[in-house]
Length: 222
Image (cartoon, rainbow, N blue to C red; front, side, top):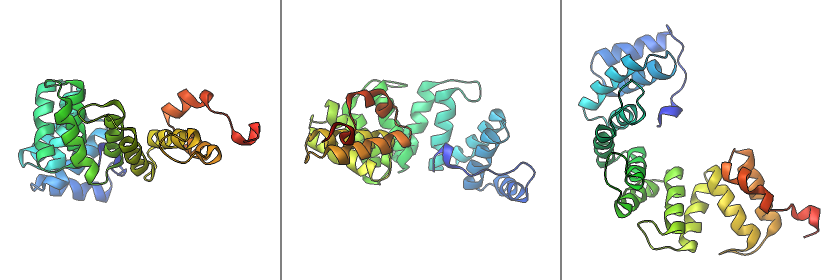
């Protein structure tokens, strides 16, 4: 579960009291949940950071991941890409899929480490194999651009399709564009247009920026 996926818990609720008690008793999972609530709902990143540290000290995979985000984004007022990278690496090595894909992106960007496209591809592939749609989408981009892997449009398209099946907005756009144009698949402008419209509905920035390149087949008589 990512930082954005945690459900809302009202301040002072019985649920929050139970989570806090479990966190105080040393439950690493509860420490992660409590830290997220402090950060996202109660606007206390400093205290959230301290609880996330406790979870990470127990090598909790998501705790390591979230603490890495604190250091990478400076959420608690301290920014350290190097520390963030090491924590992300530990999370990835512990098998946490979000840690694996984000570690790959750190290798792509050279943030906290040297750029290494081959390492990036290896870690993102691990996350993609778990079914994580953002990792599947990133694998599509790697194959589309030939970063760390052989450039191969058909392989890229297969990864985009996997992510699109889980409603990844930008993957839907790439898939829709391919179907619309008949690139690597049967040409079907009407179906491609429908997929692109779904990408737009889900907020794809790629679809928004490129929709001018595509016409509604129904309007032009295709």
